[in-house]
Length: 108
Image 1 (cartoon, rainbow, N blue to C red):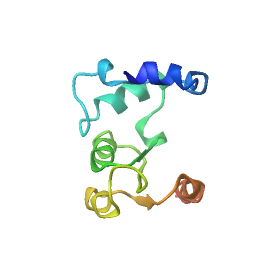
Image 2: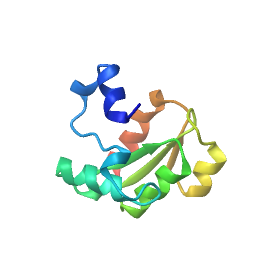
Image 3: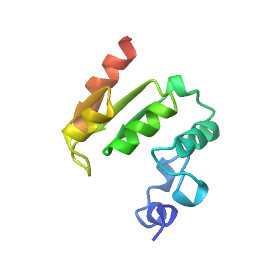
Image 4: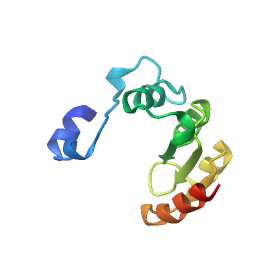
């Protein structure tokens, strides 16, 4: 099953402005190609975006894309140690913690 099909199957496509899947790009994370494509489609500059990811490659791709900040989240595939080693700016354990991090980022 593909990401576009998953989005339709779970009936969440109306909540997404842009979907970039593996079939849209030639280079995969940690290469920033997918992030760059999403930003281009959204007409958003890198310094206006953040990455929330659960793997070191998410953090590395965001850094390569020169995003404003990276947030590692530990409830997925990666560990706190791997996210920290990748250089995540913030590490959270749950999406419920994200709003506090976003407030910190906005203050910068």
